[in-house]
Length: 322
Image 1 (cartoon, rainbow, N blue to C red):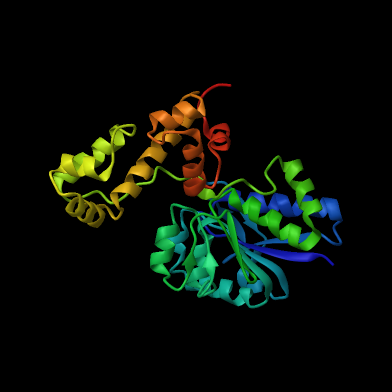
Image 2: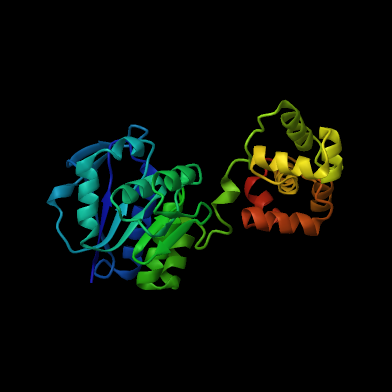
């Protein structure tokens, strides 16, 4: 039986949030046959041309109020204009109404905010683009936000990370419907991962703590970042700050939000990541120059912070010509 997918768009939406999942669903229909595949309906508050964030217009064949169930999958896209859409009672109301007729609900990128505004993520675990995750958790405290996964399933509600993660999520939806062999064939054809290694933290900016209020601690923070291979033990740092070990640890933790040891590890991990991106140094040299000591420690730290091995990270993000 053909499965009906309704994709909700709005002025300023992210074009790839629509195009990526649409291509996955369309390719699935080619493989399994149109009778068992997917029928895609693109809808907006008003039918007609809807400009994406970059100005490219997409035609919404249907107005949301024209749609009645049943719906197999409701997909809500994201975009830079999402904050402006949270006050659109018509849009939010229609998302809530259609969710009640859908077998499953999904969001791409910060489309999770629209689901949350409709009350569809209350008490659920969810993800969104790593840049927007802190705001999602603050604005909707009843949502259990996890910023790292590429996508999250909680019951019949699926949420995905930033932009291209909508492809990962849709492959998982197809795998649920038609099996992993079909999803794998689609991934091969689209030249994407079936299961992307690691989480979205590997794509995030360097990890930062709170900037200390006191000038001496700000200077010490800069010293740590500039000297990753130096002696950055608590006693050495406390001496440099002119404090006792205990007082230094207490003050540093209070002003940065991180204990000194954890801050040092984060700083060294960021240095290692930069070296992997910008140099062709072997892993043992990266470990030494970043202050992590040995390649084994580098591997453990990378797995802990970014869920990927250093070599995998370098292959994806190195600026060095190979």
